[in-house]
Image 1 (cartoon, rainbow, N blue to C red):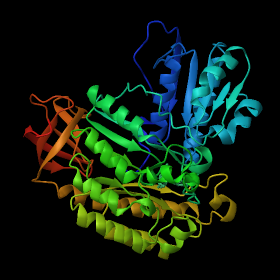
Image 2: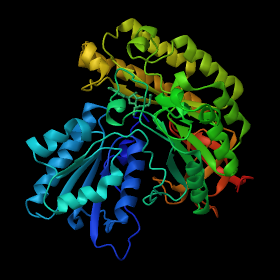
Image 3: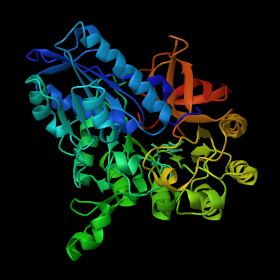
Length: 481
Ligand code: SAM
């Protein structure tokens, strides 16, 4: 609950359906945000055409790929340990090749390939279509690298493989890169500038998922509300597009509507929203279509205007409150979650109190909270000293987490006695006799199986709860079924 990066899936190995004609085995581990997991599905799809089946057994692997995350120092340290392990295995199995994908690629390519010599291949997040050439290079005994960031790559034409999935919920990438330049964040440097994917290819993917039995999609991007399709190219070049291209452009609210209409029974979620880009149109579109879930992940990072400015978050505390008020007025039962950073450079006790009072105002349903981690190359690293001592960061983070726990419990308790629609995703982790699913508000609900099955929309009466899970009893199918 406290981490935006789901610790339970860190390092999980992607497994896909085997093609009999494929002779080699790919072992691919993923770290970091959902975007990385989604990218690994694209990589597996590209390599399935190149003779690779995926395996979950390291012993069977001919190629090991690690899809990496740079967002905090801890994430990089975890990946490093894994690379050292894979490199050690190579001593006994010289034919094994190891590659680094994703966000650590650009910054650490020389170190990995030339100084430490712990990998054979380094591939940045926009270069996956070059994998067939890069693999040929390493097969011929040369190191291979491509970390070029693209202006238009969105992988809109690659159908990701969806295995290891529950067959019910899927992520659909709609934008890549980020233009926000938050001073703490490496994303614009590791994943490049923002570009949007062709809406028709998004709709085709959603239709295909529906036909395969999926019942919920999450539209994915670093800043989905900034989505803008005008025929391709970087968001920042929109002003250079022709009048016709500008007039025909599709923004996020319009995309949401198109997806909601394309599959009226498919549940639709999206993540992540940046407050500065979330418009009233989006909230109205959410309210208009029942199949768009009532849940918004709305990172704020700090409650202090001074710190928001230093972070280059382009809104104030007051503007954030106005947005929250609008959401609550237009969609009264909307769940809202946050990302928060404790101990950003120069943060003092007053700033920290502002964060706590902002949380009191909003009373978030969930929270994903972090201690500030200085990242090389970011504006904060270049311009601001990491002034807050680790023990103070830790104490402030604990206070934020404790307050969020209280709010999560308060918010979840408000569901008791209500009957809500739940989409069944699978068996409960704690009991084989129970199903696990989510409400529209993204709250996990668990209830006795009876005759229902995975993928069913079921009405569940909520009877008890913990701070993160509702426990209930099914009272029948939802009209969506
Ligand atoms: N694009 C989203 C946004 O603008 O809020 C999410 C970006 S990031 C992948 C997810 C979260 O990691 C951020 O919202 C932030 O709370 C946290 N994060 C990013 N950089 C960080 C840093 N240098 N130190 C600590 N937390 C960080």
